[in-house]
Image (cartoon, rainbow, N blue to C red; front, side, top):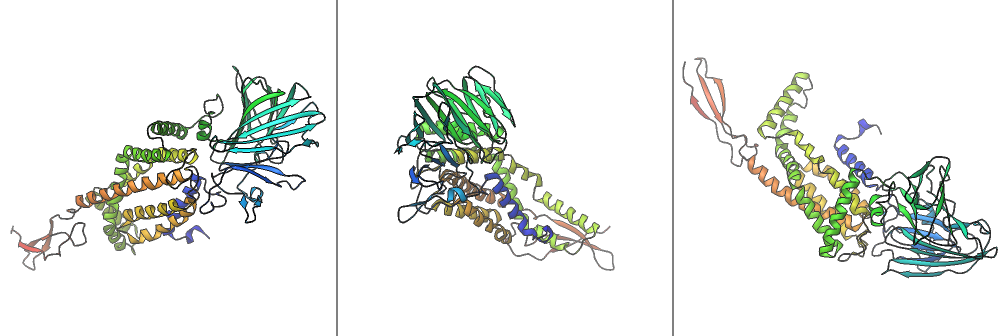
Length: 553
């Protein structure tokens, strides 16, 4: 359809919807949460690769990680929206894991390779090995999912202990190699479909080394090494950090086969971050201060300030739900003057709508230049009468940096607790109550802002039906923020509407003097006219004009 065929009245809602999708990254939400159910972190035993033997899947709200019997990661799926259920449980107790492979929006970070694979001294991930059934445990109060993998290859014994933390993207990886070399290599490939990730490492007390594109580089005694995509809401990062005295050297490989090959002692301890390359998650995991890893922009710096404010409030109230409520009220109070200016502009525009329509209808069929100039002159005179400044709409954009940063902060923050009926503020409401409240308060706000223009209300109301779908996937904390902020905005706009209507009630109550001909004698008369009934504040029937004899020359 050509743009000229799109009805003009639909352009604003369409533009708003498109902007919201680009801003929030909602274009790829995946399956909706199952009504009344939330994902319970744990281990799932299933056939993932179609080969003999089972695989072991650590599932959580943030990611689904698939291990083979040697403790090698063959599927690493980070969810764009926390709580998205890609694994379905059937009535007979079995599970359907086809969603991990079929979702176009879900990227396997390791692609067709293996992470945590050991190589060297008789160990080869491409060849067969004797494996044992792993020991799997889940301790949700301690935020741990642990698996102990054991296998033997060419007389070399390997014990690999992997501990995932369901409420963040960190993994503790301990390896113990016996009967083999004193030093082995472990592979960390990535990042999925990205054909040119940034590969970097920094030695203890040294300078940052990076590989972008083809080539390799060796770095000894690292503080950390990382594979990173360009930061955004859907970007990934894989970071390794030596722990407890483990000394690690790495070989960085850039390009399409981006790879970190870590050389470490037979008994080693690493911390691995595999998740979003996003500031808030990195901050909560203790990575944001690592030199050269992440440089926040202005929105990121505002986000860090917001996070620190949230943490200070939490120390006082001890509940993340209350933190969100208090933070929303606090920020709305801080931005009250700016929102007041925008609200007054909106209210005056609504009061002016009947007069604007009159002028537009008057010149509807007159397209010549003189008529258009006359129409603009009348509009300018109307703006002057109502003390309306179209440039006042600019104040709408001033709070945007804070609002965008706030949205991103709450969306990515891991609250590690629930609130009221909500099991976890970091995932969508499993009962959809918040989505319904979201729809109601936004329709209410739209009505308050367009109450004098029912046609505009009808034109724009449908957009919230579109947003309702996305509200079903929003983290509960985000939806609570939107609802509370919108309710405060409604109260503020109602107050502003009353103020503006009171201020404009007497506009037009001006004495208009018009000199008219008084017949053939040449006498003139002065007509004194009150406000027309359609002027703002005109509540009484129009009276007949009072005619006075004009003074004679």
